Image 1 (cartoon, one colour):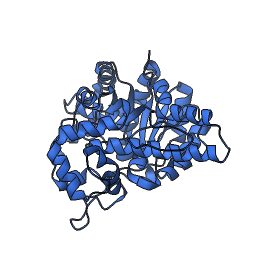
Image 2 (image 1 turned 180 degrees about the vertical axis):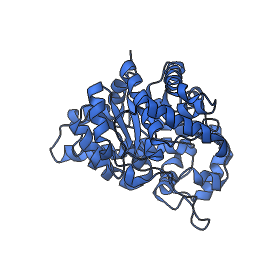
Image 3 (image 1 turned 90 degrees about the vertical axis):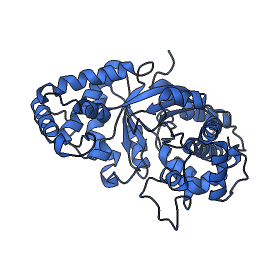
Image 4 (image 1 turned 45 degrees about the vertical axis):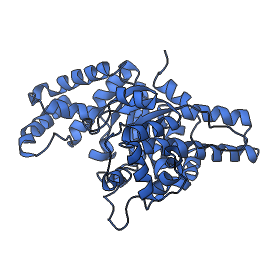
Length: 388
């Protein structure tokens, strides 16, 4: 774990990672490793994903955890990882992150990555699950239910999935930003609309190769509203990926300001909405968190990938946001390195921002320490009801 100096000591903070994914334990060749450290297209062979802020950060911060000098060449780093073996290297990296609780989205490529129990054992951390609404709909569609039964069967399947997750799911998540964008009608669709849309989707599945993929606007909205009803009943927050992501995303339509109408409706229901990652719309997310009592957010994925510029992004996210509304996440997927980078960049960025406030006389040390604790863990513990 990286250490920082100054008026504050944040090195001992135990983090709650409120949105992350499992990792792979295969011994990876360089091309496969590099595909997991970019959100873009696979890099050209003459460049490689190590030629980036995240690649530089792996060589700086992950290399010492594996017993190497900082800034070793990428090839030597991967050799050392292979010498240790992926399980041993991953254990070292995960435990060096100082993360005590992982809230894991289990809806992305579940057959390829470790499940929550295995992640908990490897990381030495408590784990809870996050249920992805679209994954539940797609699993149901694979069974080809009658369209007229789809709304009720989806609600029942969602309820059972939340209940059956380890200790019950900690929250729900939508990836509507990827499948549609946020500029959709925020009203719940009528049942007849849902049945008609389900009929079209189920009828066309045989003509589409691969697993079912829900993209119909009516079905996506129905999933969100079914999730909102269950979230209201169970006291669960509902997460939305916003902003920066892979090439499946149209970033223009992932600005969380488009969700204002939905946020207002959720506010009346008493449902908390969590905006994930948000870059380059993190200032917009900070405004929404300041304006609406039911909005929370993070800048997780952006910190992992922005390297030395992480503090600037975190500082901008804190320009308006109440201190009780910002949470920590890594959004790590596939590699333990991304867990360590998320935690390291978060600690360093938070230290730079808060220590700067202390140095300029804008904040007292006890207040800065309290803010750090809230963002690192306490806000998530409260929001997700992690303690009885």
